[in-house]
Structures are given as structure tokens and as C-alpha cells.
Picture 1 (cartoon, one colour):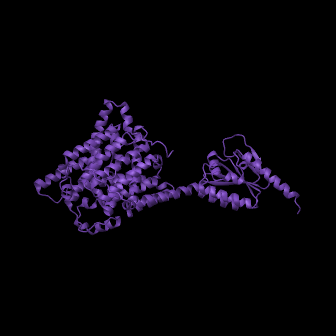
Picture 2 (cartoon, rainbow, N blue to C red; picture 1 turned 135 degrees about the vertical axis):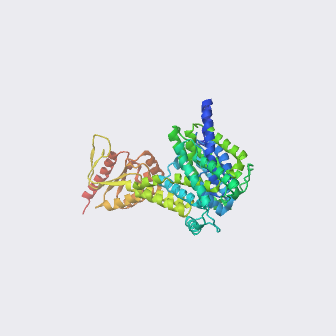
Picture 3 (cartoon, rainbow, N blue to C red; picture 1 turned 45 degrees about the vertical axis):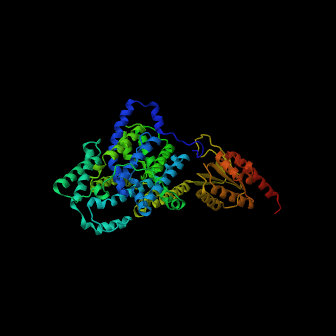
Length: 573
């Protein structure tokens, strides 16, 4: 992986047009229309749950969906607002308002662009799975908790706290204000969403619920005088179909310093979710996503969307899979999906005003259930304890505090667990009198090397980084019963050495030399030899004492020990 050079920017749309034909367009057209219909209720629901107007969700889906498809690195990726962003968006709006959200989203887009230009796409895909499962489950529970007032029709005359525990205290205090009609609408919506796929997999359950329940509620209002069920129009007023004009973001150093942690969280979350969605899509289509181009495409979308007042964009797994299932195979399907949403925005906005809030709450409750991945959480119960603790801590931090803290501390915990495992798997073997040069290899011929008295061999099996370096130093000092003449450090199984390993090695060499003990290095790989040369280790011990094979190292060490022993034997007592 190179971090410099020409940017790895090859949009999938450009490649798709090289062999495009009418048959592919028919598949993309059908898939684009279906995905547009599926995306409609989700864009509205995610926007409302995030604390913004439904029009913001639609604008985000239109612009973001178009840009992700036009500039991304996956042929079937569908971009737009997703449930994963609800928590972070809501918190940013509470703290910094819509202006702060626009700044954070713009900054996140810039971070994604830099990640793509510096070719970090492959690295992002290796974010530890327990972290992804932990914060995804935490986000799902948080989304679920935010929908209780709308689903139950609670009358709450006080400000609902932003934290999880505070929310549920307010809900419990006002639980006696449940509106049974609103609850009935929510339950009916939930049942329609659950049962629709059992009738037909091609019919979107969320859209079916919204259409049927909206019609029923409208009839109840118009003909039976039942007006207690709150709709989108009741809460937000009549939504305007006019497309927003671009506006300045207005960044300054003070806002950058304040919003950088939130922007980083948006960027990381967007990168993880989009590349996870792309990986799942590749498994179904057999294609291969250009991860760096995908990050650049996501970055472009998140830079442009806030200029039009939109919220963060990323790849949406459910919509992407819907696209594949309905025959979409090129980014044209994603562009058509954006056009469908634009048509709805321009011509069907008065109908969206009639959608009941409890119905949208049911949509989001189902989203949170599917997002929770509880089966995956249960399935990970038999995983190593370190992974389970990373998952639990990330989950609790997401729910109790916020996603920014959860991702940062989750990554830190994952790094600590990883380093601990690497340290535990890096072994140090000590040899005194004889050594089998072919041990732990596939060679049938075994070459047994005799070690002269005073020669000790320490073999390092694993990376020689800071944790292993400390472990090696402790074992080496505790294993020697008498002071050796020569220490051979066998490094054939050391794939790399970091700065701490080099530092510890230098200290070992210098302290050994003060004690009149010589050091010989064996089996040094080329990349490790380069690191030793840059650190001046070859000058410290002599280039002839860095050997590429153990037999050469033993010859050098035996010669030194024999000469020392000979001098000692003829010296006067």
C-alpha cells in the first residue's frame, strides 16, 4: 500500500459505460425505481429522528445518492442518510445547531477525501468487528429509545434530556399520558411492516405501511373527526417542494477546533458503513470495490450535501441490497433512484404532510431491530474474552455517552487487546549447547549445530515491537545462569521491528558490550536489516556480525568464544 503518488480515483460509473447496453439499462431502471420507493420513507424517518425537517432527508437522499453513484467505487452502492448517523446528528444539533451540523458534515467530507487520496480504504476495512457490532447495537437501542413518545403518543411538557437514562426517566414519569389511538396506529404500522415481506419480498413493508396507514388516518380525520393523531404536517407545517439554494458553510478555526471530534466520528462512521456495505455487495455481485475511490465518492457527497442544508451521507446496506435484488448492476441505478426521489420531492410533498408520526416511529423501530444484530451479539458469546469486552464497552459507551467517545475508546481498547495478543504470541526460545538449524521448518535434513561454551542463542518468534521487546529483555536477563561470552539473537521469524524494538536492541548491545559480551544477529530479513542500518545497529556491532543464516552466526559466535576461552586459559590466575 502506497500513501503517496497518483490518487486511486476510478469511478465505477466510468467503467460501467464502456460496455453499457439496453439490457443493463432496463435492469438499472427497474432497480432504481424500486430503490427510490424504498428510500422515500427511510429518508423522511431518518431526518425526523435526527432532529431536522423531512425535506432535509429528501434533499440529502437526492444529492448524496446521486454523487455517491456518480463518483463512488462500487457499481451498486446506494448512498443517502442512514440510521447510524441519527445519534451523532441529533447530539451535534443539540450542541451546535444546524450551522454546526453543516460545518461538521463538510469537515467529515474533507476527512473522507483525504482518506481516499492517501489510500486508506483498505485499512478502514480492518476496523475490529467487535467495535462495529458494539456501536451498531448501541445506535439501534438509542434510535429505539427516541421513538417512544411518537409511537405511544406521550404528552411530555418538559424538555427530554439527550442522554439515554434521562430519556427513560422522563418517559416513565409521563407514561400515563399514552394516547391509545396513536398507539393503535403505531402497532398497526409495525404489524404491516413485519407481515408484508411474508406476502411478497418485492413489496417494501415500510412504504406499504405508510401508504395504508396514512389513508386510514386521513379517513379517520375527514369523516370521523378523530384529530388526535399527529402527522408530519402537524409537527413541521406544510412542507415546501422548493429545492434549497446553496449556502456558505462559514468555517473558522474556532468552529474547526470545536467540531473536529464530531467530524472525525462522522467520517469514520461513514467510511466503515460504506465499505461494509460495499463488501456485502461484492459478495453478492462478484465485483470488487475500489475502496479508495469509494471513500473519495463519499467525501465528495459529504462536502456538497451540507452546502444545500443536508445531513451526512454514507452507503446504505439495505437499499444497496434492494438494488442488487431488483437487477441493478451499474451506478446508473443509483442515479435513477435519486431522480425518483427528486420527482417525489417536487410533486408529492403535500401527500407527505399527511403521514402519521407514529407510523414513522414504527418504521424506525423496525430499522433499529434489524440494525441491532442481536443474533450476531449472541453468536459472539463464545469469542475470546477480549473481543467480548471490547463489544460490551463500545455498546455501553454508545448508549450512555455518545458515539464519538464510543468509537475513540473502542478503537483504543481494540488496539490494546491486539497488542496483548501479539505480545503473547511472540515467543522467545533459549538454546545453550546444541541447536537444530532446521527446526520449525519443512526441511527433511536436520543440521545440528554445536555451540561452544559461552555461546547462548535467543530466538524471537514474532514481531519485535515494543511489547515483545520488553518481554525479550526480561526473558534474556532472567534466563542466563552465568554470564555468556556471545549472545546470538536469532531473528528469522521477525517480520518487522519498530522504533521501541530498535531502541531496546541498542540498549541491549551497549549494556552487553560494557559487560564484555558480544552480540551476533542471525536470520535478519531484508526489511529488518534496512531498519537496523538506519538505526546504526550495524555500525554498533559491526556489519560482519549481522548474518543471514544461523550457521554463519554460530561460526562467528563460536570463533569469538573460542578465542576468549583460549585467552582466559593462558592468562595467569
